[in-house]
Image 1 (cartoon, rainbow, N blue to C red):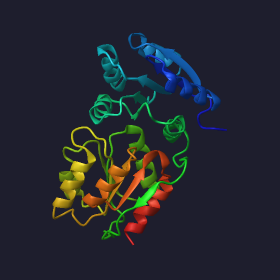
Image 2: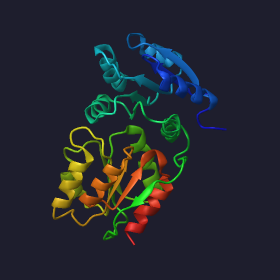
Image 3: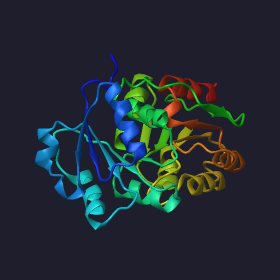
Image 4: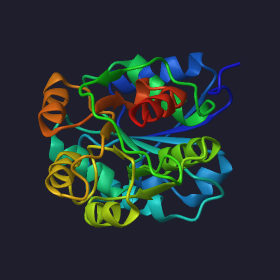
Length: 268
């Protein structure tokens, strides 16, 4: 049985063709679809409908929808509620949605299959990914510390942070997770990691800026950096390689077990 079966999805905002097709596909996987407007969403509604996921059409956001996105992230609910925001494919719009509290974003040109893969990451077991998208772009090797493989993660998605923490604990990897880029490099220097796992879309500084700072810091320049992001363009991969990344992994296409194996390979 799919991990999506009997999950409740609340679709907020106008329905376009992408959302309609996504609703049909999610229903095929056994999910229950509910709809609402930005001004009608309350904590009571979310609890009453047992909502497990919110899909917010943020393409033509007004003040009410912006406030909703901020408030949902801070609302005291009975469980963690991931929010996916549909946004225009522009870096400032994506960054705005993530900063306001969206767990992930959807762009109008994205395929329904890709979106479903992202949702499966949340509701299936920690290793239920659709397949590998590991791109090895350098041959860096970490200098392994005596305390085990120490991994420093820069990731702002709370659900993915939990999954990574669980996986690293099972693998006996000492780890530290930062949620934004403002203090990441300073914290890395203090932590002395063997491997760095870096998202690209972050509040404050983006991952490329952090990668530049890592490679410019004498204490960090030799530490392998793995990009772990939902951005998946040839331009992003080329830029990561030019800046010295040791690998590029697409979140929705990467098995966490394979990610652990990649980290282990870098430390051999």
